[in-house]
Amino acid sequence: MAYASTNPYTGEVLATFPDATDAEVQTALAQAHAAYESWRETSFAERARVMTAAAAILRRDVDKYALLGTLEMGKLFGESKKEVILSAEIFEYYAKFAEKLLQPESLPVADPSEGKATLVHEPLGIVLAIEPWNFPFYQVVRIIAPQLSAGNAVLLKHASNLPQCAAACQSLMEEAGLPKGLFRNLYAARPHTAMILNDPRVCGVALTGSEGAGVIIAGTAGKALKKATMELGGADAFIVLDDADVEKAAKWAVLGRHWNAGQVCVSAKRLIVADAVYDRFLELYKKGVAELKAGDPMDPATTLAPLSSQGAKDDLHDQVTRAMSHGAKVEVIGAPVPGKGAFFQPLLMTGLDENNEARHWEFFGPVTQLYRAKDEDDAVRIANDSPYGLGGSVFTRDEARGARVAARIRTGMVFINHPLAPKADLPFGGIARSGYGRELIGLGIKEFVNHKLINTVDIDAPF
Image 1 (cartoon, rainbow, N blue to C red):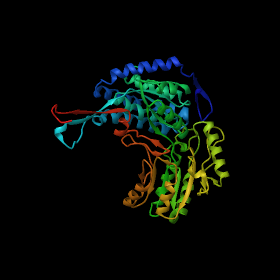
Image 2 (tube, one colour):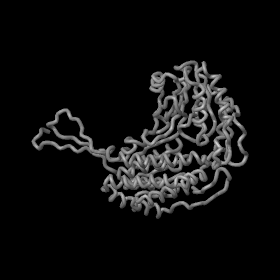
Image 3 (tube, one colour):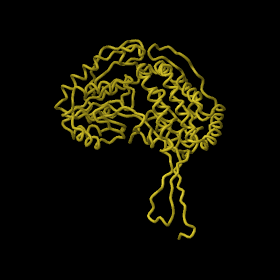
Image 4 (tube, rainbow, N blue to C red):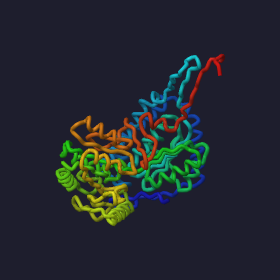
C-alpha cells in the first residue's frame, strides 16, 4: 500500500511515505503497552488536561490543520475548518465528562444482604484505529479522545492518501503533552493488521470504512478473539412528507447530499418524496443543485469540491454505468464541472424499482437517488428497503408525526427537519450492513473497557 499525498484539485503528488517495517510496528506495540501500563493509573484530571490542550491547539491552529485536509482529500476549506473545530469540541467533551461517564456504578440487587455489587470500568490496552479519508481529523479524534480518556493506548492506521494528516494527528497529541507511545501513527502495510490484532497487548480494533474493509477486518479480529467496532457505509433516506416545508426541505436536501462532495456515510443519498409535493420539491432541488459552484476548494466562492481522488471518480462513474445497465435513468443536474481535477458532475438517478439492484448500492459522491412515495407508509417502506441502517432524516411540519415516522425507520440515527450531522455530544453508529458499535458520548468511551463486577459479600452469607 503506497502512502502518497496527492492534491485532488491539481493532481499534484505532494509527498510520499514508505510503509512501516515489521520492526517499527513491533516497537510501536512495545512503546504503546509500556505507556498504557502507566497511563491506566493516571488521574482523570491529568488525562483531561491533555485533552483540553489538544483542543486548544486545534482552535489556535485551525487554518493549518484545515489546509492539510483540503490539500490531501480536496474538501472545501470552509468545511475543513468546521471539521477541525468539531474535533476540538470532542476533545473538550471528554475532558469535561470522561470521569463522570466512567465512574463506578452501584447495581440494584434483589437481596441487599447478599452483597454490595459495583460495576467498575477499566481500560484494556491498545486499540487499533483504522480510519478513512473523508474526515481526516474528526474520524481520528472521535476514537482517540474517548479511548485515551478511558486510559487506553491507540495505534493509528489512517487512509493511504492522508499521510500528512496522519502525521499531524500524532504531532498534535505530542504537543498536547500526551506521554510518548500512547498514540502513534503507523504507515502500516496490509499484513500488519493481522500482526497487530494477534498481539496479546491489543484489545480490539475500531474501523470506519467500507463494507468490504469491515468484512476483512472484523474477520481478522474475530479469529484473534478481539473486539471490533464497525462504522461502515450508509444509504441514508431523506424523507419529505406531504406536510413538509418544501422550500426548506429542498434547501437542506441540496446541502445534505453535496457537503464534502457527497462523500459522507450519513449523506442524504436517497431522497424519498411524497407524491403530493414531489414535483415542487424536484423543481426546487434541481434549482439548488444548479447553483452549486465547482472549483478551487480553497476559494470561499466554491460550493462543490472535487472527489478525493481520480480513482474515486473513476469508481463512481463505473458504478453509475452499472446502475444504468440495470435500468436506472440518469439525468445530469447542475452546472458543468471543471474537466481538470477529480470533479464529478452531479447526477439525478430514478427508475430504481424493486427490479433494479442498484437501489441497494451506496453512491459515494454527488449522485442523488430519487423516489416518489405514494404516502407516509410507502415512504417508510422505501426507506427500510436497504441493506444499510446508518442514519436518516424526516421532514414534516408536525414534529410528533416526524417522531412517529422516525421510530419506524430501521437505522441507528434519525434527524427530524434537518440533515443528519455529527456532533460532539451525540452518539454515532448504525445497524445491519452499516456496522455495529457506537462512537462518541458515553457509549463510545465504554466500547473498549472492562466492565468489571466487584461484589462485597458478607462472609457468613449462604452460597
